[in-house]
Length: 159
Image (tube, rainbow, N blue to C red; front, top):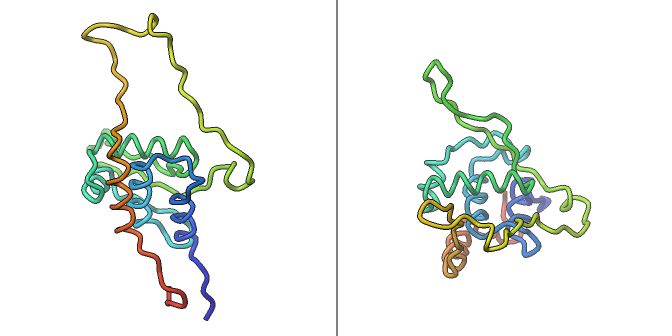
């Protein structure tokens, strides 16, 4: 029996690789979403942010932000945008796993940088928009959760 990896497993390995430009918490969201992907097409993943938040321990708005970021970086595409149409029936967003163009071509990639405004141009005061800071300890906690979610298969084990 050949020991070949399924496309979903290859995608998970790519997201977890050191060359991947995805932040740790977004990786956790991607791994949780991958549990709902089709093994061969990487499609039809529609668990909803609430379910992903329950699986990852992240807040729902954080999961939504990570899904958006994964789409921007090219690791996901949103096949169907969910929401509530006028009829009142809620529809789930459907996601498809993808590889960013730089990943497929092997060319170096610089992630898009946010333009920093000079301090004098930033809004000041009580109503000013705050940019959230990244917690230093969060990456370590998330890496442990990802390791628990994705256990490597022993060589020769049936897929």
